[in-house]
Length: 604
Image (cartoon, rainbow, N blue to C red; front, side, top):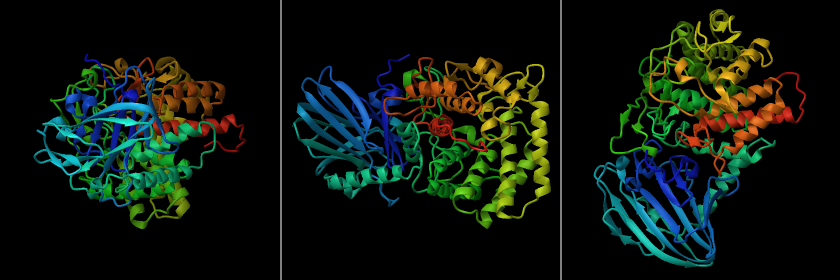
């Protein structure tokens, strides 16, 4: 396994609601897809060596302390060096533009706070996932980067740069109070000709702080909840209303393993959960834009408009063909590095429940559903009625033979339940008797076929014996009471078989034949937060509180999470991961209520 030069945990993320860049604590941008989040990468050193493209900038000090922090309530990142020679900082951000046609820019502002330092810069983009041949060209105030068939890029600077064959370099010195500025973006962007960025910085700062102030959360863990909300917002497309599962592709779920997926797409499930989390914090506008995006996905569906895909591209188009990048060695030698995701071809029946729950809540707290939107719902729920008894790939996108998964049954029940509630609330036309009959049939099926009387708990598959952490959603979607003895027995079984010091595995691979992949994976971060919420809802508030605090300690120094944890509590998988951050918000929201001693007649 190759040496890890910059760990997943060592990164902050900046974005402009169109794409995102990862900035390491040593001042290196080693991941950026451009101009869209799902476009080919131009910096991908995180997934290979530095030869795969990076933008490094740092003072030439030895033994300086490095730290990163976000400006409060923003996605503007500062990387700082504190040494005997002085204090230096880089402020990194991507300007927020209301005009969705404006191309993304990365702005880097270096400031000497105290003392003096010599800085070195290396900007070496590698277009098309490091597969394209690059040539450089000197331009007034900057250096341009060209590759055949790829968008031309340019770095403008307030200092003198040198053109190399495939890169731009600079070597300059700053004294206390001095600064230098760099803007990276499209060669055709006129903003790159105006290197002064103060106005742009101020507008971006105000945008993020204004958005953060809209949060209704006023409980404990305010900072962590705000950071999670900002991470979710950063993954949201300003233009389309979709939300990506994560900002990255190819980061492994096991070091050296093959479970290396592309998450730069919008999963119906993850995006629906994300909208639920944002709505809980008062962000109704995002929910409205998301429901409009879903409507476009329905219009674009290949088969029929009642049958949704598991996932869509961020612009609601349908095909995400999976390929392997043979030129990249992978993070920690974890091959293959994949782009695209063939899960788009799978049947995962649970997505209808997650989507319907989000639609129900969007109607409850925001915009009433349109006539066309309700007709889409009717068609979708009729599809659920016809197909809920089928086996599928399940929430974890198993690549083996389809199974009858409890979670898929559960969410089909949620789909029917929320559709019935919405129809009655809005007095909308629907085949009430059929939907009610199928909802009751699913409930009966779960109790008859997914409850194991010998073991005394629910099981992950029909007639099975084993557990799955997705079962933790059973009380969270109000299928079963959080203190029901049968549920408590299931929760206790999950604790024994899947939980290790508060870190929760999705399932035991040896007990899951539908998982046809080699190797293993880490503990799943979202499931760990679901477990905390289940403990709190079951009345085990002090246990939940302690486990929650431990999970908060596993965040990186900026409060960001990837998809999974190693046994040491370090990050694995793509980051920042929407599912993790939304689960944190949900757990924090409910646990805060319980710790505050709020008396409610009904527990949601």
